[in-house]
Length: 342
Image 1 (cartoon, rainbow, N blue to C red):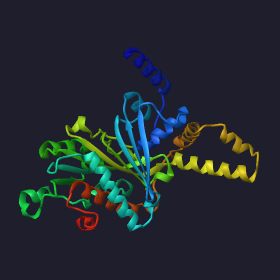
Image 2: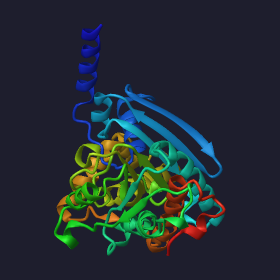
Image 3: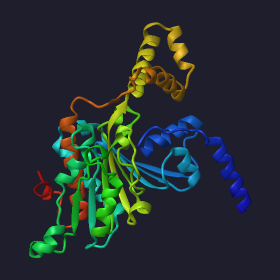
């Protein structure tokens, strides 16, 4: 039996060898792998979807190393919120998302009531698309200092929470992992929650998606500058990662534009040779070809929507509200706005 399982795993490894994933979203990696290998489900990946009011929730778990290698992700649990209306100024939707986000996040936290938590806002506060982490860290309700100096202000519905924005290597001259590890060694939290900007390979998911993972995170991944991972192995405590894709590369924009253009050409001019030629390539081949054209010209840029300033502020408030409710039982959805720091 064991030999059979090893043979099957080897066959799967050989079949998936060389497959490259270029996205920070596990959901997209799963979809890409399925499309590449013509499979609706991938062995070693458990996934379920749920439709809620105005958004979709996907819960995915990678259960073995072969699937992890194929997707380019770590073994563990991934939760994805897809919220098309998140780009709009919709306070009711934002409140509903924050409430459900808090409910799902509590399942990842799973700590005793008084366990301490360190929130790490990763990213560069001087670069708006990369400023999500610092923006959330600034807005969350921190209480660790109150337990030391004014414990009478807190009832049983709160826990010790601290927040820090360690900056990036170009600002501090210190690796983010070194800073966070030093704080963890001194503070000794029971859990680290890291927030960072991500990159998507879909225009539709930029500024409309929230991902939660229990596998840790690579700081700077959203802007294509991955640093040393923050995870249980490197920090010695569990790490929950929260990310929002704020950028997409020029290859994706060019690819999607060409796809829409060819689709339109086939409607206007039936039998158009250009459209037929485009259809001869699969999705990955098209992207690879566009990358080969743009890369030597220095035009494979990371791009963000023009309304990113407003969006970062809005989504930071949503994530911070969700964190506040998930970490502190005394904070209700009705009271949450009062605990949001400016």
